[in-house]
Every structure is written in C-alpha cells, then in structure tokens.
Image (cartoon, rainbow, N blue to C red; front, side):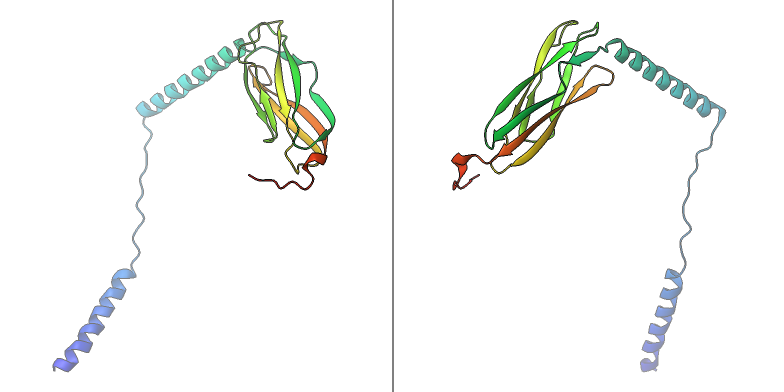
Amino acid sequence: MKRNTLPLFILILGATACTQSAKPKAPESTSIVATDENTKELQESLKDVAEEEKRLAQEAKANMTTMEFSELSHEFGKVMEDTKHLYNFVVKNTGKKPLYIQDVKASCGCTTPKKPEKPIAPGKSDIIAVEFHPKEGQLGRQDKTVTVIANTEPNMVVLNIGADVFKNPGTEGRIATN
C-alpha cells in the first residue's frame, strides 16, 4: 500500500500544479473619471500655461536684436599640418538692443572659436576669433564650421572656414606620440 501512495501523491500534486498555473490573471485597470470640477481645474491650468508661454515669447522678442557679419566664410588657402592659423570674424550689432553672443561651437577639435565676453552695444562691433590648427596627419581639403548662437532671430548663424592642408616637411620621419 505504501508503494502505491507515493506515485498517486505525485500524480495528484502534478495535476493541481498544472491547473493552478494554467489560469491567466485578469489584467488590472484603472481609470480617471472626468468631473465638472477637475475639468474646470485642467482648463484653468492650461490657460495659465498658455498665458505664461505667450509672456515669455513676448519678453524674449523684446530682448531680440539683429547682427551682421563682415563675411560668413574665410579661406586660409594652402597650409601645413600642425600649424596654427587665426582669423577674426567681425560681428556688428545692427539692432536696438544689446547683442549677447551666448555660445560659439566648432564642428571639429582642430577649430577653436572665442566669443566676445561682454554684450555688444547697438551700432558697435566686436570679433569672434577662430583658430584653425590642423593636426599632424590631417591632410587634404578641410572645411569646418563655427555655429554662433545669439539673442537674434534666427538665433543661429554658421560661419565657415576652409584650407588645403599639406604635409609639413619638418614632420617627415617623426614618430607621433600621445
């Protein structure tokens, strides 16, 4: 009798385990019910957000100005690798509010722009200095950009520099180290 109980017990245990795991759980769900009170609160909140966005846009527009560059691109011509070349882009504030050059970003690590630190008064000019330093082995045609971000509309202007980079005879046979 003891020998027959163990297989019977295992059979019953297996059958109940299969029936319990075979039943999928019903998904739980929640819902939000709109009432007159919370609909009104939502509409008031959206109205407040829209008014704040409008106020901020007007404030930003009131502080906008215009700028003009003497030129938008510069060609360095033929240059040797691992040499530094500097060009100053002249920017003029042609608007009625102070011009804030907020940022200048280069497209490559071989190009380093420097922005004016102080605001440019209406009618005045300043420079954005751009240094181009092609690294050893950076040969051939090189075209780079500098993006200028300011309180203007549009708020972004792209300046371009270019050069044809040749092997520097002084670097022949030299081993580059980092």
